[in-house]
Image 1 (tube, rainbow, N blue to C red):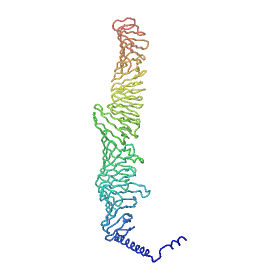
Image 2 (image 1 turned 60 degrees about the vertical axis):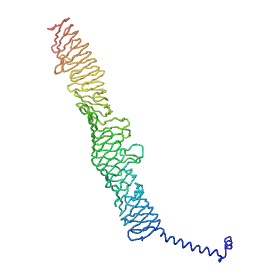
Image 3 (image 1 turned 30 degrees about the vertical axis):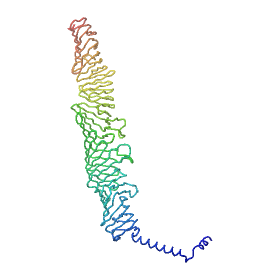
Length: 582
């Protein structure tokens, strides 16, 4: 009812109002038609070029796509506007997509031009590639320069401006800078024949990266830069650098398969037969660079220091040397050489080396051997402060000097003086052994202390609080007691001081000497032994007292022969006895 009422209120059909509205509609239709004829058709979606000419001279359009057939692959370019002819076609605000078995490519360029079948895309330009199976973004790049950025012909790309590429996956994750002239070949490989190519490790995270970047003269790499090959390589490492002829990229490693040279900020320089940097954990940086057949040298105030090992790991914390390590250092005109299965050298903070190892220290593990001249020390673990060459050795410690060998507990010292905790046993090359609670070894001087320390050789057994061995001389500066072999049985000795050298034993200060059935006391006693180390002659001087079956008396001096049981007194004698000496 309301609609019928409204229709009744409209003007009649012949009213001038209807005539005006009709002519207005006709004029509007003609105007819009003329506008579209002048500006061209709006939108040509899905046109395919490269087979039959689809674009005549003066073609214009907007909001459409072009498809370029590349063998089994297709490049699709979406544009905002298009104009030109078949041999010279221009697009603006271009979005490109290319799906290949190796990757799904997307690109964005402000302008593109096709001349004689060759496309030129303008910069600034963005690129990205995703894994065709998982759709995970592998990398993205950008050409910052305005002007020609990329030439594309027959499926091959040529970079007309530098490309900054960010690899998001794999061992080569980071930023790649490719110079003008880079190419992408029909098989998908990126190639640079004339560098420099520069790769920078990611800057995220808190721990410093060991492998920080690489420069190369030549490169080829697959989309995403997870797999590739570099030539003429210079790598930047934490605290140093390396140079190699080639480097190979895989999703898991960066590898230098051939010989390389390196240098460290701490002065080490050298070479290796190869190296590898394992891919870090997701979100982490390269913490390990490992070398095969590692050799290094370093100049110092005292001379050249040398290192060699089967393998070495370079980390921000320092060096981890593994397998047949030889560390050769100068020492007073000779060489101090450490050999061990493993040596760790800390140069700075880092978790790859034990936190208990301070900066500036090194530790050798797995039965280390330290050699200088004719002397050596062996221990399951040795730690050294490199500046002072102060060592700490884990028990048990084995040693060798010019005079003999020894074994003991933990030790510490430097190449000139060592302290070995007991129980200690020293075996002398000249015969005999020493035992005690502590050994101090200084060059040719051996000082053994104990409660008591003991010296034994054949049937010769002597002991005292402290025994000092220098060359052939063994001295007891704080007292001596023990036994010697004699023809008629053991000979007991006691004195405030004593010294044994060669075939003579000298006792001084309150000397007591006791044989089978006789006792001798004197200020000093000299015992001469034969080749069999049995007592042949006893010479006493100063307040001599003799008691027992060889006679009893007092005098200034006497000679006693245990074998013949004879006594010869010298000087004034008081007493009684038998034989020519009385």
